[in-house]
Length: 99
Image (cartoon, rainbow, N blue to C red; front, side, top):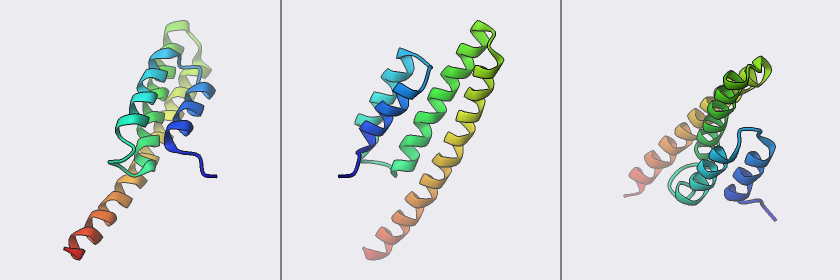
């Protein structure tokens, strides 16, 4: 049985050491954006948010590894979001031709 995007985002939150603020944002993305965007866009934005929080937490506590992990996670999220955006554009183009 496939895992829905909300469950993926909750799992992402559990794996992340970003904290409860990221958990709230990830849950919000899961509930509000799933039906409107490609799943890659939702997951990508969630990773960007989690990466930003992780990067900020690393700066706050002086942990350079956590800070660099956050930057990496943000970059992965940006790439995944771009892939989802391309899929959305193709889907919209196809839907436009059907009308």
